[in-house]
Length: 432
Ligand SMILES: [Zn+2]
Image (cartoon, rainbow, N blue to C red):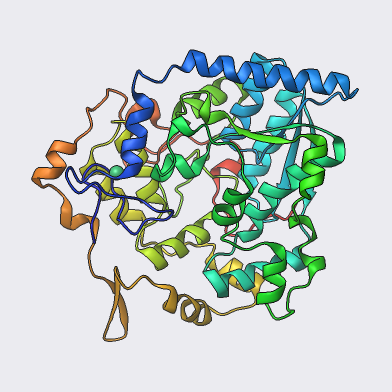
């Protein structure tokens, strides 16, 4: 397996990553570097955003609509940042929309409540019915090895349906994660929301009617009602467009989390997480540990690879420190796995049997009945190429005292918040 000489991604990372033949650096690292370059005129970009927002305000006025945009929110750090910027800096009147996929953590519910309270915005929360969510999760687990299809389908569909229903022309997303992770679209492209990205990236190529067909009727159209995208005519009539804030601001998840902790009391968790040292990202998504473990079982890498690679690209962590994190966290079976298996009605043996044929043979092999990785990042600790690819280190170290509450460090664990929702890891999820 080829690994990036700068970060920790293997070349089988999803979505597609390309590793440069010459310097061994991956497309995600190159994208990150291009964002740091001075050629990007962020002031000019903010002007473009201002124009889009004032256009939306004007349209809302003409339509006699109080809300001028929709912000899809989960209660995470990015939701806090998006709402803060739009409301406080640009004076927008956003309607917040949450797609409740039912796999909520208590920490996430605390932060969603906090967001509503601090922002003073109205919220519509659409809750998926658990019977259908269970059926869809199980079908998708068996088909593509993912139990969160309905998340992405819901998050990418429900805000559009509400936009059409309420005649609101603008939806503002946070980060165009597709680009940031692996760099296959450049910042110059100014990507907006497209139906293609929704279907191919967020929904794994499945529209609701594909699910009905492929499930042999086990899942009916009524189970998929929330995931049906509005028609082209409806979108055109309301003139809805979806934009990504990360096209207009330098996107630094850590800075955003820090500023939202300070300004609006967003809270990281203080307990040790099963699959990453990061205490502030994706803490609202209780199923993320299982979702991420599936990624490891299929492709041989997980969330610690993602999070450590981000730290490395920012120069806050060395590649060597990152490799330690990958070794420690990526192979861990999450403590919440049994909860989801019980909910879906399958045994652990069945679970592993479902996943076995989905394991990437470029990385996994079965040796006397046990799955083993053929290669791993520890085999590429230091080479000539990694020396040349090294990022200039910054003073802001991931595991410094200053970052004690943002990243879990055994030697200096975070301070407790005095709130059980943030201090105690729970293996069960909350539907509401
Ligand atoms: Zn890389």
